[in-house]
Length: 331
Image (cartoon, rainbow, N blue to C red; front, side, top):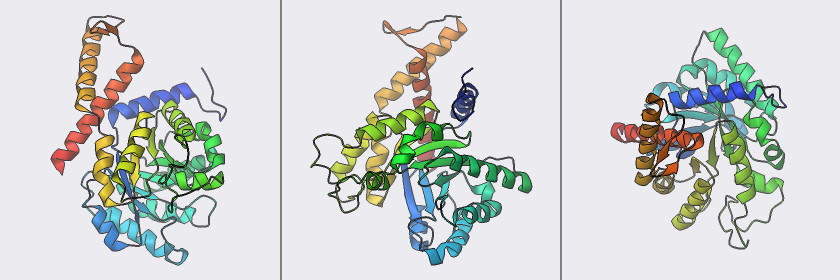
């Protein structure tokens, strides 16, 4: 048995993650962030074909509107028809005076309607552990058995350095999210784009974010988590957006944040498994089940050996495709 440096049994954590994956895979191809204090934007988000709506209490909400924004988040969770979308909201950072109220005030009033909480600028595993403990206390006090998941945004050099520890910090954790703008700022990287969100990168001879994207994806997948890419800043550049999506998808990313409704279609397309991938996955899953029934320890398809990792990938694609079909039929 191997113990991770933070004291957690990684074998048991991996087993629990695999059970969770088989039971339910949340679709996270497209995630739109909506300022919780902007009612029109919140209402519009529910009409978009995104997989996740994230009500934001952090950067997009002025200090003087934080309290009112929490009330609006509670109302949205309790009153809106989410139509099968993942129900999410982002708290303020754990180094601010707002985070604890963002958790207590919202979760006590609307915890039964929340799927995940997004934690920004995570620099240390202790931040996720602290939120886990607080949520557990609230759930015990309120008599709730449904656990709220967590997503950790990796947005600094310090956070990226500890991405592995953060990924294994809590069984509530479902996702690591790459925050490109703040990450670039923390490294004092040169920026040519106005938004700082991955656009206008032609001045660099290569893929400037390949290393951090790969590093974070490795940490996420090692812990059985999803990996989500940062938004693309120029919403008037569809081809740039498509290239950005393809690059992160090729590195193992499951989805991308959206900053404008016009980006949704491209993002959903790129992060949806191709029909070829789906058919191949079905064949692998069916052959695996037949091999198990026959008591065979190995599996070959078309003269090629299929290992355990390929079977896990095939199962994940098959389940994801069923979720996508269900979403399409229900919309």
